[in-house]
Image (cartoon, rainbow, N blue to C red; front, side, top):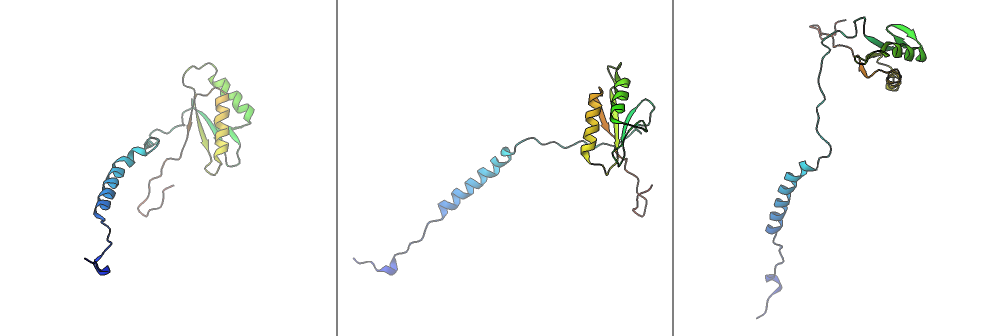
Length: 144
């Protein structure tokens, strides 16, 4: 019996390959979310409900656009700022909170310097003051 070359066909059977690929796809779809490193956290959304720091007992460290320091709206040097904060919090074991109010055009490194100065003076908690959102008018412009 002789076989003619036209009768031979070399066709791959792709059905088992497709089955294996689908099984692998399902396995990877189930396992992939487990490979995420770290953790998921949604930062808190808050609003400044009280008008801090407006009370006389609050310690406010201000930094203007030029990088000059202010303590409760009075201009001070770095050493004077440390001295005033240390004097204020020397006898307090609790309520060692200071607020930092910095110009928005200021580099954050300057704010970090103020945080370091406050830490040297004995401040335990530093809160950054942000601008409260203004209500928009009907035209869409912000009210001032």
